[in-house]
Image (cartoon, rainbow, N blue to C red):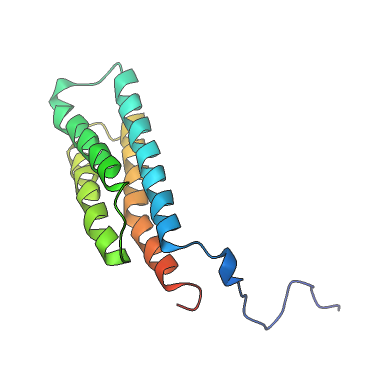
Length: 134
């Protein structure tokens, strides 16, 4: 039986020149968060079943979006500095997700996906900070 051309015992390596910098990963995270928050707010605006009781959820999304836009212009020295600012926006989204009362709605599903982004992005920034050599 012939060996697969894909099976080797060598570890997979990546050219460090192709590795994203920490600043690039931060910019990507901020761009993705802003796009997700804008889509979330647009979803709320189009929701014909929106209840005024969820106004705090709506305001939390606005708060997170404003914070993301403010920190976009900041230069972070390390991943932990980014984490501190990032988690302020994440906290608003986490509280909104806990408070929202229609879990089957498109808004709730978008909110859940956005929270996943807020949970995952810091680990990518930290990984980029240390490079492929870790």
